[in-house]
Amino acid sequence: MTESRRIVLSCLSVLACLALAGCESDQAANDVTVAPGLTGIRYLAGGDETSGFARATAPRNYFSFPGDHEAHPGFRTEWWYFTGNVFDSDQRHYGFELTFFRVALTPATQTRESTLAANEIWMAHLTVTDTARGVFHVAERLSRGAPGLAGVTTTNDQNGNSLTVAIEDFSAEFLENDVTLTASDAEFGIDLELTGLERIVAQGNNGLDPKGPEPGNASYYFSAPRLSVRGEIQSGDEAAVAVEGTAWMDREWSTSALSPDIEGWDWFALQLDDGRDLMFYRLRGRDGGTSEFSGGSITSALGSVTRLEASSVNLEVTREWTSDRTGVRYPVGWRMSLPALDLDLEIDPRIDDQEIDLTVRYWEGAVTVSGSSSDAPVSGLGYLELAGYAPLAF
Image (cartoon, rainbow, N blue to C red; front, side, top):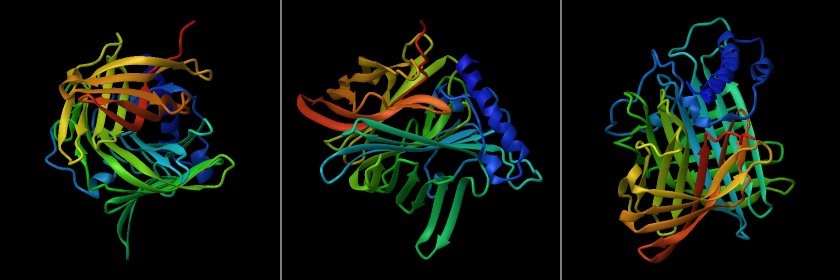
């Protein structure tokens, strides 16, 4: 086990004691203190203890809804990932991320006296990138899985069957092919409606996405790569503004989805102005090289999907940024080329400091895209995630 994984799992053990023991009140349930700045958000999927948990081992013939928007409690880890780029009436840009993570502590729920006792930890991250002001807002919710605190609920009413993923006051409500994101903190927040969930891309091999050669080191993974967005964003001391734009949803569940020799990854979700949507993740080995299990997909404007192997994509770092807060150096500028598609892209952050340094530490932020496709200019926007980078040694 790598040291970074030990740190993450030690941190989770603090939460495990709270969740499995139960407590006397909601207040106690949320008085959780953990050390900030753990490296690599998705190391939460890389624990060594897999006994009793379900494994992702075979392709799926299909994903079904709303069922696959729900939790998959047989698996150790899963997440609901929303990122997007929106603009107000003055064409001022905002980026946003709202992500929900579920981590199971045991393979099955155990019967306990307390109604608050649970075998799951839930975490949510909310960010808003206010490009015009050069401000990056970030907030976290962290709780046990328990009624009124965190989890998935379903509601049947005159509007239909809705499903809500929530951690305290952060929520994503699914209704047919729409999802409403609602989350706010002291100085910022979002209230956004996303439409277009009917366009789903099964990543990997019919939804089975291997992350290494070991049996079961894979996730079930699908994306909704181009969602339309309308709603409001509030940033700082300004009133909420109406915005429109596009978003991306990633959905994964797994048990131990990373090989032991993987130190981190660089994940790109790009929406090009010619209608194509590109997802690629580069798994980084301990030697800094690219794992052969890196991969992704590119989806045409008409919906046809081409799988991308590690050898399909060439990546080159063009610029780095070092955080004054954590001492971590992140590769925030990139050149990406796909020779078989005659596609060359430059990827740059809207602002450099889009680092999340909370219970776990990673860089995730809004980016711009420019370049060429078969000698014609192409542009776009998207999100970049950089995980597993450690502070510089002096």
